[in-house]
Length: 312
Ligand code: 13P
Ligand code: SF4
Image (tube, rainbow, N blue to C red; front, top):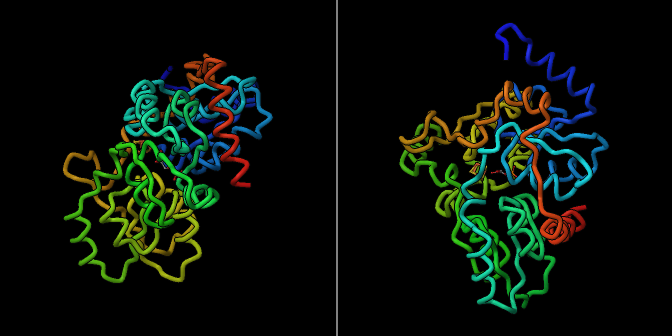
């Protein structure tokens, strides 16, 4: 890309010309959030991907999100800025291993967190996100046996909250489990008046001490509606951008990651692979494009559609 090009102006021009829509997750860089047509959590983004009348979806997030958009809207071209933007949760569950695991529990229903591949969704009965996981588990009869995959931390949290026993796949989000217990304890001592709010992908001990647990959209809403004015935010730091815009007078402190993290907060290296330049190239060249084999797509569609139906 030439140095003197105005990327934002060019992206907006191409978007109109090609009738494209830019969907972005809260964890991507601020400049992309600022030009996106829609920013949201995984549920909101899926709902948008299913409903849009655009010809092309540029999905600024990670691979499984683009794939879910393609599963829902197969007639649309779906591109993502960087094919390498994956997710540790999706990577933790290879389809062949998961199929063998599932075969051990033939009388169980499979509920999968949306952070998984289309192949896993095809082996799933109902997909869920962090904003509807409790509701979806609770919609099932009390004696229904359940496999929950691939996030064991979210699974444990849901099992605890609903009182259901679930067989858990042992996957984790590398970003949320990297939040430092020691540094968080120190921060809480320094700010005893701050509420701790956390994403359910965090480890059990953080969730147990949190004042509020929810999806990214849920955390954003909580901070806005709460009478409190100080929060320690235990999730990926990208969410702070919208939070600061929505509550400019409140104090927001990102929960610190371990010393391995590249920032003083917690950043997802995959989400941060999205750059303005890559968004521009994706729009211009209409690639990298997401494809899902039709036999997998049809099965994955059923499990995602069931989630959307239960979340209306
Ligand atoms: P939500 O935005 O749905 O809470 O998901 C968080 C996440 O880690 C996405 O990868
Ligand atoms: Fe995956 Fe965690 Fe990154 Fe979300 S924050 S994309 S769950 S690795």
